[in-house]
Structures are given as C-alpha cells and as structure tokens.
Image (cartoon, rainbow, N blue to C red; front, side, top):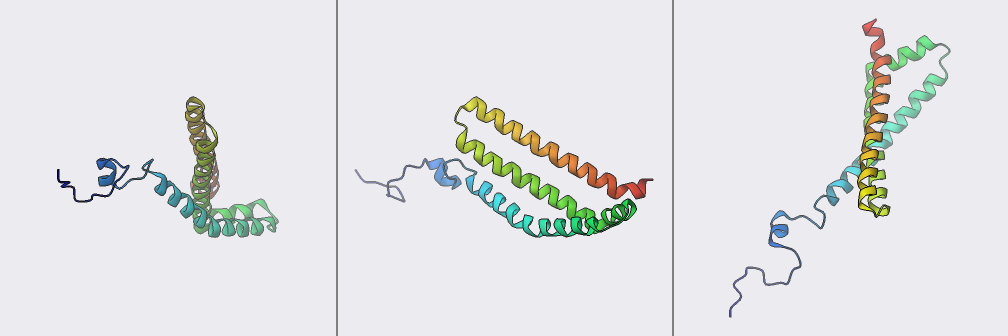
Length: 139
C-alpha cells in the first residue's frame, strides 16, 4: 500500500492542531508575550511614577500636589502605569496558580479570585487618579 500523505513524518499532533498551528494549550505563547510586553512597559512607567512621587514629596502644600497630579500628562502616565502593573500582576499570579494549584476546583476559584482582585485594585487606583485629576475641572 502506498502512503499518499504530503508529509510522511510521524507526528503526535492531530490534523486540526497542525492546521491551526497551536501548541499543547493553544495560548501559551500569547500569554508569555503579553507578560513580557507588560514587564518592559513597566520599566519607563515605574521610573516616571517614582519621579512623580519624588516631586510630590518636596511639595509644601496639598494644593501643589493636586496641581501636579491634575496635569494631563502626569495623569495619563499614572493611568498607564496602573493598567500595565495590574495586568502584569494578574498574569504573574495566574502563572503561579496554574503551576502550583493542582486541584481543578481550587485552581478555577483561585483564577477567578485573581482576576477580580486585579480588576478591583486597578479600578480603585484609576478612580483615585481620575477623581484627583478631574476634580479641578469638575468643581
């Protein structure tokens, strides 16, 4: 009998997996890249955050601190930092949970709790930044 397959190498992958080009889980590379991108984006954002906090430490009055945070560029930097750090935190904890929690029920519960925690922290930080930065405009 003649083998009419185009590729005669033995493969453990299913035909569907070969067509889609996905690995074992189908999303590991994307998760790895997003985690690396957030790690790289955190570097300049955290440096800017430290500079902003250092500038606020020397301001003698509350009004000057509000004026600094109310500046649109400063508010945008802080918002981007919160989003990037919260997403990086969520992805990092997700890796730990997936690697070390072996019970399926606990793993699902921990992943859900991790997502809710990251969203709650991010929303609280974003609310505070927006309230301070837009407070001068809205009042």
